[in-house]
Length: 491
Image 1: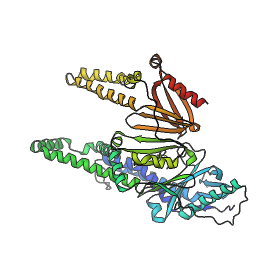
Image 2: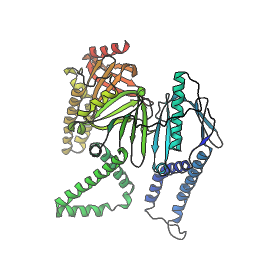
Image 3: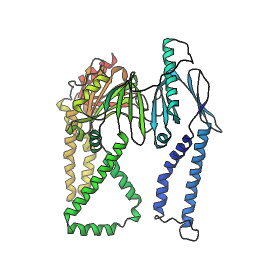
Image 4: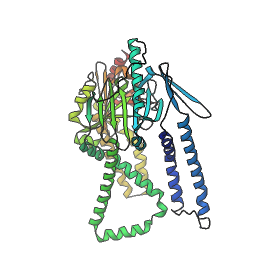
């Protein structure tokens, strides 16, 4: 195999520099707000010396990031040798990483703005032993042809090892495509709008606005605004209501835009015993999941989506997803419950998706909400004492706590079918957790003193996903049912 050394594209230096600058955005905003948006570069004007020192520090850090990005690009090389992908980088401290091809599970791709301008991709190499959500190697910026070559060589060596053939460097490698793959799911514009409306994107936008206002608190004339709002309320309640509706509508539109950018052209394709998921408009992402790396499937229905008959499907995978912040891999961000089981049946034909659940006994009902009283009672007592008589209204919190507990009771259940275990539970969202016996890393039963008196118990199953794993729990079941599950797993 050729030992020719390959370098990253020079754009990699710019990308590494920009990543470093992102970390300076928040400190810079704090600096601007702390100085009341009053910057001066004239030494004779007031505020110059209070600004120049922190600006000098930020500039120095920026130069360090720029130098670091250039050094990493200049020293980073990769090559193929002895059935391994080898990487070396570092100026004063040389770092080397050798990855055997047979350990490489998949290649995930990202295309940011800089990548798309120059026709490049970022390649993240996932290995069989990777469980911390971080790729084994990241090639920051290489051409599409170079990325295809890496994937071609890896697949070719694996195939030849399987067939016990000698490596022939003159073999023509075929370019991998997903044209022959089977499209499992593709989101349309209507799905994107529903996804944005029923997700937590609006909450994220509102939280960002609140955080920004908290930073700009000294600059906002709250007293004057309060007077203006009070006068406006006296003048016309309709205008105030329309203003609030307009603000919420604007927030909703921003959340729709964010969701549209993140999930644009979301497509799931099955090809060669693997799933290929692509999404994104400004930053295009592609993640590859070998089907044999999927540990469990989760069907999640938040209350609003459940009401309208929609759900989201995620997979717990031993792979790392898109990187540090994307360890959970979304298979279907939004799909109708009526259309859900057919694609799942095509992907996982050995699973049964509609089963009769074993439910908790009636005697277990109080166990789903009684623990809430442990923190509700002190809260109600404090509110009633310090804000009497209006604090007595805090007793009303008990009602939704009981209702949520009863809702959880009605949802909870499990089913065993051959080698399959299905667990259904709820905090607020209804979660259906489906797993094969061989994928379960640990199955544990728990029983408190109070549960023992009622002959009920809880069990939880853990699968490999990330560093801590993923756990599903079925609470307050008959002790006989829990013992049956434990015996099933022991066999």
